Image (cartoon, rainbow, N blue to C red; front, side, top):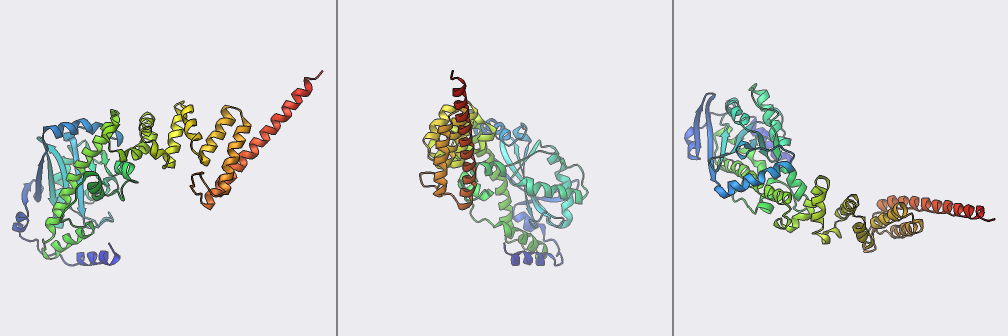
Length: 410
C-alpha cells in the first residue's frame, strides 16, 4: 500500500459521519440484528459441519500441536478462534476493530460469528457482549495475533473502560509454527501463502487487505456497501482457514510425536529437522537419517546433524560424514578429534593445513563452494591460530621426548 493510498484513507475518514444506512441493507447481506443486554448488534453467522471423523481427528492431533507451540492442553470446545478487520494497521488508539470474527466448536460443527460495528458508538456494546465469550475460552487461536490482534483488542477494552476481558488468556499464534516449518520452503508465511501452498486453497473474488479500511470508511461516509460483502467473506475465510491450519499442523506434529515420519510430506522434513534440533534431539536424528541428500546441500543442517551425533555419543558415525566431506568445517572437526581425542598432533596439523589451503583459494569446500572475502579472512585467522598452536605443542612434545631420552642414558 503506497503512502498516497494511506493518506487517501485518512482523508476519507476525516469527513463527517453520515447517518447509518437502513438495516435492510445489512439483512440482505445475511446479517442479523441481535438484541443483547448491551444494545442491538449486527451479527453474521456461518456454520461448517465437520463430521465425526474429522472432529475425532482434531481431538487426537490437537495435543501435539499445543505441545509444540508451548501451550497447555486445551479441550477442542474451549478454543476460541479470533480475527479482526480494522481501520488501519498501526494498532494505535485511532485504530478501530470494525469487524470481529470468532470461531467456536459447537455440536460437531465449526461456527463462525462476526460482529460488525455499523456505527462507532456500537464498539462498546460489541466489546461488552464478547466478554463472556472470551472468558469461556481456555485459549485463543490467531494468526499473527500476538503482534497485532490481541494487543489491539486489549487496548480497545481499556479505552472503552469495559472490564472483564481475560488479559492472561493464552494465545496459540499459528504464525510461529508456520514460520519454523515453512520459512525457507515457501515465498512467504502469510495466511494467504499458507492457504495456497499448504492447504491447497485459492480464494476467488477476495479483497486485498490494504483496501479493507477504505470499505469501512466508505460505509460510514456514504452508506456504501458495494464491497462490504467481500470484507465479511474475507474475515470469515480467515477464521475458517485457521481451523484448517490447526488440522494440517496438528497432523504434522502428531506424526512426529508417534514417529510416523513417512506420513509427512518429504519436502517438509528438512525444515522440521531444523525445528527439532533444539527441542527433540532423538527425533531430529531419526529424521536427519532419512534425508541424507539434504545434509550435503544444507550446510547448517549438516553441522547440526554431526553435532547431534557427537552429543549422543555416536562419534564414529560423525567421523564417517566428516571424512566424506571435503569442507573446512569437516576438516576442522577432524583436526579437533585428532588433537583432543587421539592426541595425534601430526594428523590434526595436516587437517588444519589442508583447510587453510582451501581458504587461501577462496573455497569452503573442494566441491567448489566459495568463501566470501570477509569469511575467508575470518576462517583464515582461526586456522592460522590453530596451526601455530599445534606446531608449538609438537615442538614442546619433541623437547620432552629428547629430554626423557637424555635422562635415560647411562
